[in-house]
Image 1 (tube, rainbow, N blue to C red):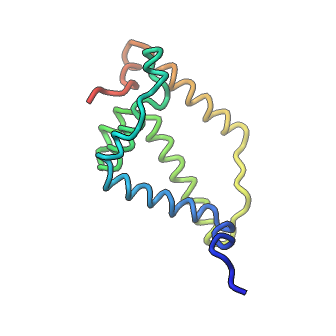
Image 2: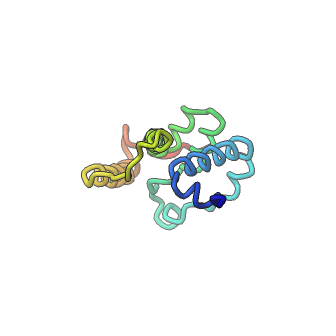
Length: 141
């Protein structure tokens, strides 16, 4: 009996996610100009005048897809840190899955809380109007 594609990929979720992320990266590279206009503005910034942790994120991702690392870092450093962390996690888990040594991915509560507080601290500090914290705010184009 032939195994369906869905059941085959469901046993390798990290590999599937790696393929999807790679396809999204290729699409962002080739379609970055048209994709930038599709994203809605930040409602939090529009209503409060403060930057949220994601403000500048879409410009950051598009600049990353163009290879403009320094400009991307100036838009949203948290996106870069998150992307690096996610890439390391994705590569590690995909490698474990392909070597068939995968187990269930479990994040420690300590790491989870560290990530939450990292986002909260970034959110608060990027709205402090004195150097060096103003460097965390997105730069105008």
